Image (tube, rainbow, N blue to C red; front, side, top):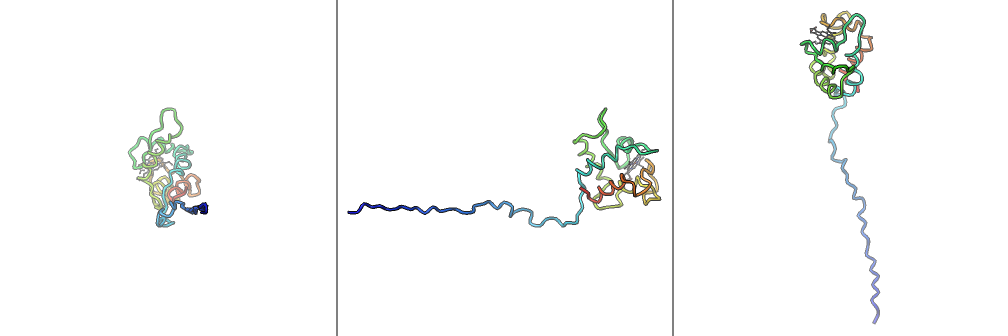
Length: 149
Ligand code: HEC
């Protein structure tokens, strides 16, 4: 009688590549590339400073647009603060969309504070804050509306 030396070489079944393919169910089609969107980051880092900057012969945007009834409205600065908090900036970003729409280059934010001679609206209660389209601050507003990030 032979000892049963059953070489039980159990085949190790390698379940190869059970890698979750999570990515495959991602957005089926990404949005059409050309659809501009307003960027909060750009707004906070580049546009809000425009509202806070003093221009020769003019009051700062923030002086009027936190207190007047114009469609363009900003949150008042906290006492002693020289810029807006994150929370306030987010509110400003919502509020500014009353006068700025992505991809609409006629948005009031772009046209209204720009001098008529430079292609802006005929009258702004806050004056011709920008006398030329070459003004870097005006270009910042334009870039924002164009969807700059
Ligand atoms: C001296 C106060 C004053 C300052 C400073 C001022 N504004 Fe105004 N702004 C007004 C008044 C008043 C109105 C509403 C009457 C009008 O249409 O001009 C207005 C209206 C606007 C509107 C709304 C237009 C509409 O009808 O939709 C925009 C946008 C605007 N301002 C942008 C700005 C920007 C940007 C700045 C800074 C670069 C600025 N303003 C600075 C007084 C001011």
